[in-house]
Image (cartoon, rainbow, N blue to C red):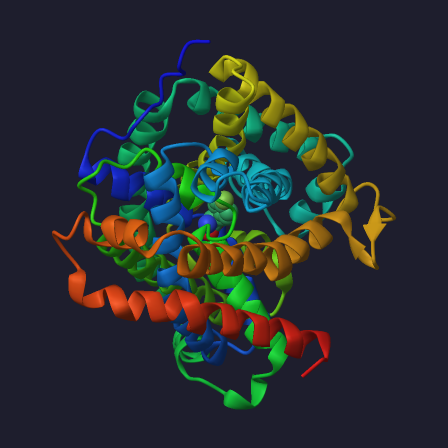
Length: 449
Ligand code: PFF
């Protein structure tokens, strides 16, 4: 049987932008603000940043090491490095996790696409009631979610360099510019100061073990860590990519964008008197009325700003759904030797069906619940608070204890050329700090500690 041609990223910038494109998404612009709103503002922000820096960066480097060394899809990468031991299951766990995430994420991405369309075609329509009417409709949210997955599918079948890399190189810079414009617009509204204070002034009385677990889950979700996504992307890196730098840059960018998203939303919400803890619908209910009220005197500015905002959400979501989709597509292409387009259809169909049920569970079929939560909420909590930290912990254990130290050293230092003085610190982090911290947070949450 012939060897399957593997794609690779074409440039250093392409590598950073594509991986950052995976990390930066609705996790930053939708999930982070509403989690922060529900968990006490700045105190949550501090925990989230700490989790990113202390646990996230070593975890990311670990996934990079596995992916780049093995040059294979997630399941095969673990298999190859472990000589067929059950570690392969970590790869399967990643593929399963990313497909579940794609299922519910596409629902929110579909809302964004629908709002973008409404912002362009029917300005002034997207009010508070509009969200309730639209999201509870049996057909519309489903169509938009499936449309979003199909959009992702189109990019994926174009391949790694022509599809993923090119899309990220265009979308990421546009996203950054849009975000900065919106931060300035929001922070200069009258009454914005309360929102800024909420995001930046910590109230430590809000902290609890549940908030810590939520911050950990949010950090991992936001970095795309624990799904084998970073492992899959790293298999397209070049031998000269500096893994520690790439992880550090992406983590920093990811945290900065989350803070900017907070600075875009909370001041705007404060300016029009909307509570920051309105939950997952925060950006859909809050912002349309913010745009309308804030720019009532010059409606055209309100129009442009709202179109820009929903375009930003769609771009951010797309570079992330591409990465979730790629994990499973690479797996089916390489393990079952299917053509790339057929593998992509497998993931598109599975995630598409899940997204239909997730959309109904928060809309037309509220009875669609698992363990007392809507299916959508259940998938979100299950992946972010359980599957991702578990995946992250296992990859750290794998790199720290299982694969030969020589291999880890060669990958971490690019064969001894760089980062040598950080190697011991890295090894200490992945052997002890990350697994122990994650285990303690789990045990505490389960009430064992
Ligand atoms: N990191 C993405 C975000 O913040 O929106 C979400 C994500 C992408 C999670 C890819 C998992 C994944 F594999």
